[in-house]
Length: 318
Image 1: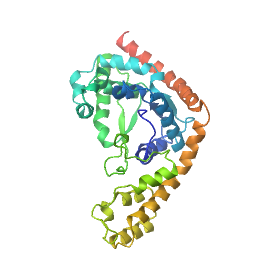
Image 2 (image 1 turned 180 degrees about the vertical axis):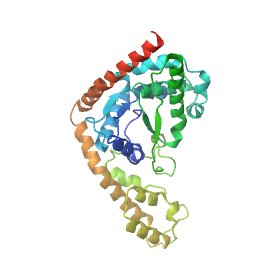
Image 3 (image 1 turned 60 degrees about the horizontal axis):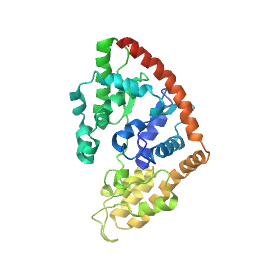
């Protein structure tokens, strides 16, 4: 995950629960992808290290256990960069330009990011995966095209130099489609998020500003919960079935207003965030604690990465 600052509810209900569960089934490597962050923020790196610390605090507070999993910073393990360089020698340019997100993001962010590093993002991403001979990668369906390239590249390497790397398989993970406060995709760039570390008053204010049923202009107008972002959030935050049914019926009969519904939701979100926020703050209040965790993770990651890179170099003949 790229260190772009505090994580939000989309992460809390999406990637993080899957990551936490995977610890019970696999040996997991969780990487602060700061080199990847440079592909779009090479001219704005002042806060990147702090953002990485904040992100790791969110991971651990949400349930990632650095005693069971390897938590490390990408740039601390130089083998990532070296393997990416070697893989880059055998990847055709056409493979990279066909990646859907390349043209999309250049169109969105401009030619400023149309750099060698950004074009080669999938090569570094492949190195991140196969450097640990990963057998599984948790992805959503929208990321399958990226993983396919991370399978094509080791396939080509193995064809040229002999079997070194396995082709990683996808673990398809279901994640809820949590919209942002304004109904658009939840994204920090849109300013429509609620952060995991958000204080209670800020949570309340943001919930009270949420987009609701556009057809319900007045309190006496009957609502349509199936069109309402607030009602969807109640479900995502595990409101009991009987309460969901009660809100649904009351909304359709105009027996409940949006303000009341939002107040209930704010309380529900706060109940979920409070213990996570407390664990997170305990970590940050201990100077150097996150860096200690990352240093320990670097040692574990490098032990594997060094061995695999040496094997790859021997296969190439360098």
